[in-house]
Amino acid sequence: ARGTGCVTLRGAQIRDLLDAKHNVLFDCDGVIWNGETAVTGAPEVVSLLKQRGKRVFFVTNNCTRPRENYVQKFSRLGFTDVAEEEIFSSAYCSAAYLRDVARLQGKVYVIGCGGVMKELRDAGVPVAEEEDAEPGASIYTCPLDPDVKAVLVGYDENFTFMKLAKACCYLRSPECLFLATDPDPWHPLRGGRVTPGSGSLTAALETASSRKATVIGKPSRFMFECISSQFGLDPARSLMIGDRLETDVLFGSNCGLTTVLTLTGVSTLEEALAYRDGQEPQQKDCVPDYVMESVADFLQALEE
Ligand code: PLP
Ligand code: CA
Image (cartoon, rainbow, N blue to C red; front, top):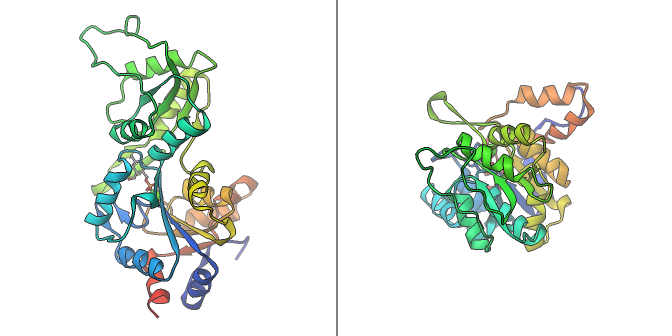
């Protein structure tokens, strides 16, 4: 095998890896569930890891739900012992960033959905009201709020040209922050369909504003800092398990974590090998240390 990484995990190796780690960070969609269906064995793996004294965290770029809503989803899908404090979403972390890092003095204009709005409200970050589009509203006459000091872009099924135009006007001011919940390009849906991700909306606004957004979700280090500031994790004793090389694995590399790619989601072994064996040095950060078919492969090591 050329290069390093992409080692297929088996038997005793799995046990040794778990022995060496104290914290396990799971991506959600594509790793522990696909949409509304749990990955077979995933709830048992999470429970057993906890019983073995591991600390478990969930790190998702999905900004559409507030944390309390995730707690319900976990329990609905058979994960019986997951607490709100263990769930770190790009919506929760974006709100934490605006409150604690940017210390926003003013309002944030949001292109996004209910999950983002709820987390911002819970964090006490003022949001610019979006009036319902009136008939005849135009890019010349739609009101702009002079208190807006940040624009945050996330997944928004009600994305419109008007929202893009307004955000673009706010970003003319260099003092106005430009944040993105996550850079995900698209997501798989049932039946072979896909939906455009937040990253595609951010890209439109980046082009329109000639600016680059600060990304809060994976692969940015900020999500790990968020977890670390609350739980004090040692990166060397932490494992990141994901299904997307350009977000989850790169996130792990950026934060100094050991990375595992599972093949129940977006990225394939071939794509991982292509990064490993390709010429571009910066692609090496997308190469997982280990590859496993599914998180269920942890079961045997945990049940003994
Ligand atoms: N954002 C949206 C809107 C999604 O639907 C999904 C996956 O379903 C994600 C992000 C990615 O979530 P995760 O980081 O848990 O894979
Ligand atoms: Ca995923």
